[in-house]
Image (cartoon, rainbow, N blue to C red):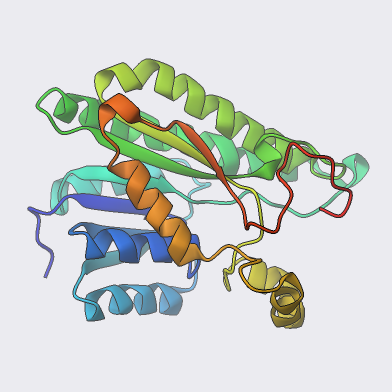
Length: 263
């Protein structure tokens, strides 16, 4: 049964990788986790069951974040029926694959923007006024935003993804400029490496997924449970030491700012 007195951790993009592991970590820390994903109701139910079996509190909903009004409705419903959203994680990807410019239709490019940038704007627009008001009474709020190497470096064939993620990064900076003084913390997390996530990289690679991880070697792929600890830390930093952008990668990988033709 939902305990409305608990702070709420809202996850948009609650798959079995980053989103699900972050939800499990925050639920273990006393939050009620609200999980939202576009499809796979069975997978969503398994995540909720896993959290509850571990002693946490969670609920789930299917949601198409690209549709106008869906994010806004979820925020309003969560705050009215469950409790105040103390921390939100925007974990939706915007990868449409590597495409040449001529092979990137206008609607496909726009979808990347809707998921990569516009969704973050809509979530902040719906949530930040309430977060800022609660911060006046001593309860700061946090928005965690999962991002990627494309936010800081554009590669050939990544027109839509790089534009969406670059916009996501700049939006996080403008949101921080306006709302950090009001007690709302925005942390942009550049995930600069492959993540051991069956719902994303696993589906992309298919039968090659296990071989890929073996080739990367021990600790060569980001563990989403370890990344969840980074998210937990970001959400609980003291206000005099907020991190607004961090990047993470396996120790074997070359950082995004280095020239590495194999990446």
